[in-house]
Length: 208
Image 1 (cartoon, helix red, strand yellow):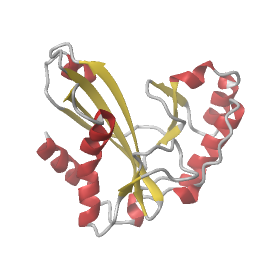
Image 2 (cartoon, helix red, strand yellow):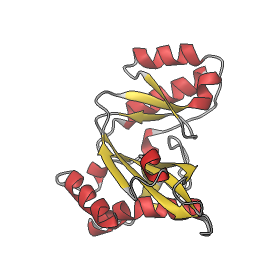
Image 3 (cartoon, rainbow, N blue to C red):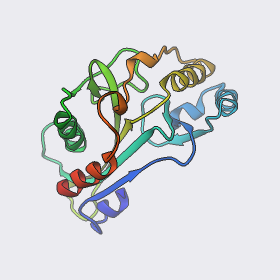
């Protein structure tokens, strides 16, 4: 998706997807830590094989209870607060849909959240979705960057199991964390998930 936008083949790309199996996804920098192999084996025994990603942050869970939104687009180099604007471009369709369900979503960090970040989507002081970005110079346009922005939405995640696996993995590689299930919220605690996929596709189609 990022290549397609960076080379000018596409102006906008959108993908709604889920993993076919549960897994623990970690940034590549963690694969260089001592204890990584042992930590990966421990996660596998828990039913969460480890996958390495190219963005930063901490370990996160992918499972049947999570839905992923990925979009690729270009942004002018001269735009102020490019990172913040890209996150808002990614998140606003989901934020708007949450407001329609009667929720009051916000951006912010949450103590005890997995892969905590300033552009979490937060509802009732609990993390509903996490975000990430990758940037590349747009070869088709010298005045723009190509951006791949990604959102992980908890729809019906077993946060107790997820947080236990993340904490154990982090401890095995020497990272002190204490992620907590109560720091997270599922979409099913806010509204019915029926029709959620269709609503997300419709929202990002309009965005395109």
